[in-house]
Length: 214
Image (cartoon, rainbow, N blue to C red; front, top):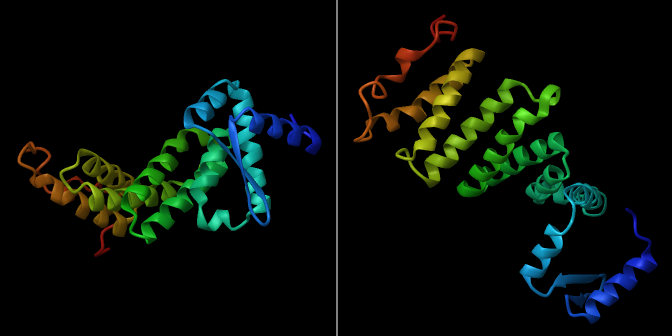
């Protein structure tokens, strides 16, 4: 539903008079802020899911058109709006970009969060899903972020590198298989590790994984 400028101004004036929102003016624009987060959340929850999706999509397009630098500086913002708007392919692309940006800044927790968000979208992409190499890169990025923030004792760290290890083997990516194995190795020396999990990871290398001596 599109709202013309006059109706929008009238509605904002009414909200301001009721003190549900505050208006702050700057040299170039006006900013409206909810008086309290609970008011904002109640207003959001009162919308139908289809309405929320439409609004998120409109916000994403508006940001891309009016503040193009956001795609480079804050890709996670666009990722969130595209995801909530149901545009999973664009959301995946921006979450992946945000993960790389966070990793380049050594922001481990942000990188891990963005990697998880991108990986969670993969099943929803269908024919638009990227190749398995892109998934492998995300798993490796997530593993590095978890190793930085949680350490090798964290169960998700081991699970992530094991997933990367299997995927790298299936793709014949020897270098990434070795890198993933190096990520798995420290987790095998936990006090609670079972004998099975303590075997050398190289023993599980599938035969179709190329050898460095081939």
